[in-house]
Length: 264
Image (cartoon, rainbow, N blue to C red; front, side, top):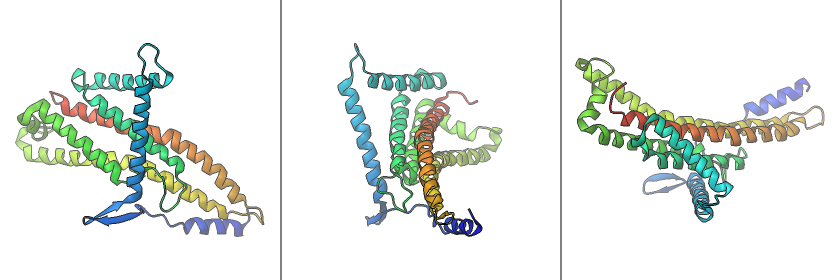
């Protein structure tokens, strides 16, 4: 690639307009609704429901199908994780953790339809920070409810005001623990959102390679196809499942801390 071609490619990449949170929106009830996130979330929910219906129809305890065995392996894995961290009292967390994993996994798989456009017709809804944040808040609210039920109001307050420093510093303890609790849903949401949103950014940058030419040969167009396919496979089949697993695992660990009867 000659100097003019390199300059053209660099100028094209620098000219890429990368924006965060660009969505097809509508105003209703004094609020702004991200329509594309709403319909892709609904599509992910429909896929999950169809998966469950198919499981119910194919369920056979005497001669389980491969599809049923995959689900049973997933439930068994989550059950062992919960039993190992929380114990039998945490069994009620299993449906939540499994539902989070399956829904986020399906939503992340929508990354395969992401083409790097400004507004995706069927992109992953988890690439919009609103959905991960809503799920994170839902998890954390449930965590605090479980903590109150396990420890009682008195034990719940002692947990936040009585440690990690001496009880005389209860106000400082409360402040430190409050910051930590606020950070939990924020980091939980941003971790999922950032990894999924970065996939769209990478496709946008890869598309900018189309300006790369050597004479009249469109080398950039060739690399757009090659790198686009490689990144898509990496993003969909590695990053997506890992992030779904991490979100569900952290939810289990948060419940583990909340339902512990003693402070460590």
